[in-house]
Length: 162
Picture 1 (cartoon, rainbow, N blue to C red):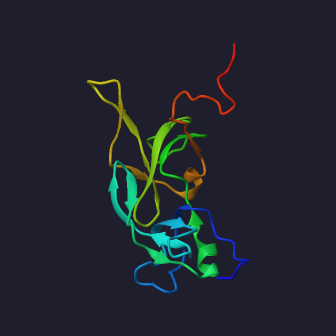
Picture 2 (picture 1 turned 180 degrees about the vertical axis):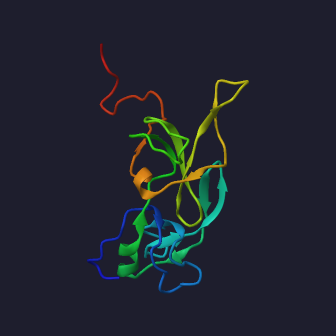
């Protein structure tokens, strides 16, 4: 890797080609966590370890990446989490998913996007997201807008004066 190589930002990606140094372990079509830094110096890829609540955790040990062409081939993915739909869509002939629908975005181990839909819990004021979801095509994936879930915050400039 040369000093002028631009590395992608840290985040979730799907590989579009095998990692040249480890093609069996990291083939094309894998969900990976990419970090543009590591304890050893070069960027590193981490593979998914297990999925809980529709979110992946990743192995602590990974694969160093020094091939600039491989890094530029990584397909960036949206962060796992909660989104709303900018437009409605029809998953089949009978159903419609409405505009502004709340969804949880997750992925399978191949980096394919999956939407999970909320259900209202009967005995609590809570939404529940099942682990059964719907794979979606890129056209629907492009309609997802992130949802803020952090609640009230103090602005960085200090409290608002009234």
